[in-house]
Length: 337
Image 1 (spheres, rainbow, N blue to C red):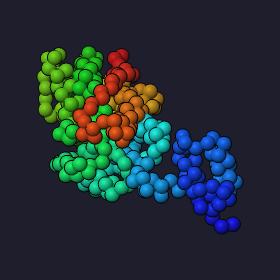
Image 2 (image 1 turned 90 degrees about the vertical axis):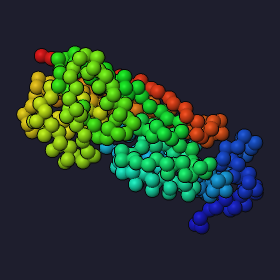
Image 3 (image 1 turned 90 degrees about the horizontal axis):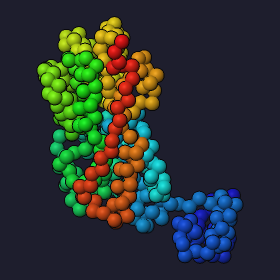
Image 4 (image 1 turned 30 degrees about the horizontal axis):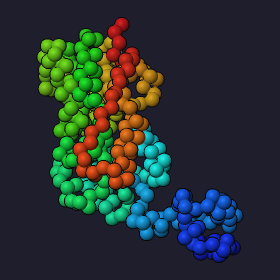
């Protein structure tokens, strides 16, 4: 059987192609019975509307791009889930781009997306970002852009973040209350907005409780599991911390592995707390005390901000900031006795 197109479907029903098109776009100005007839005939003839072609005519791709540093982190998978749900409700698809914390990849992706591939971008920025001005170079042609979690403070665009400073302060304070006075802070990139904010919470909690600050206890880690294993083992051996606060989930895993290899007992010898949205955190041995961000909700809020702009209800450069609250869940990795 020949492939069916909109013209043949229109002929079979003795209707115009524009009427067929309106039925598939769910226009309100089409009679419900006519629409039902068209959809039933389309199903019978196995006709699939070419939304991409009609979107091109409307100059809309009906796609939003989501740019994240990694997919292995449960936080990002949950955030993407939230974004996708809102996108689907708005009749949009999502394209996912992973930068691996590589600034050059981020720049390449953003430039590529300005060729009409997407109508808007939701991004958690890369860890190696240097000059963010490339985003301003698009001028008025810049696609609507919403940051979530990791942001560039010098770019005016809507963003969804969590109360990172307060969460870090409470996490550090919790370790101090559990008797720790040599607390290592493990961070992947302390120059990034999120690294700086979380580190400030750590520093201020130490100051409040008169715990001496040792800059060697701020341990700069990497994006490589192999390198982190070496860095963390060296830190645990040389610095001998009694508490570890990790700014990202994968550093908590790396700490657990290092402790296992070095025969360090968690929580007896070392207490560990981490930012993490890991659903199996309670099942780790010992169960991991976490600061859990509302990841799915962050994704949903970021998508809602983007669709507000796409619906022409807001200025795309508006500095609209939504701050959501994380919660600390105390488990065995920070317990005494």
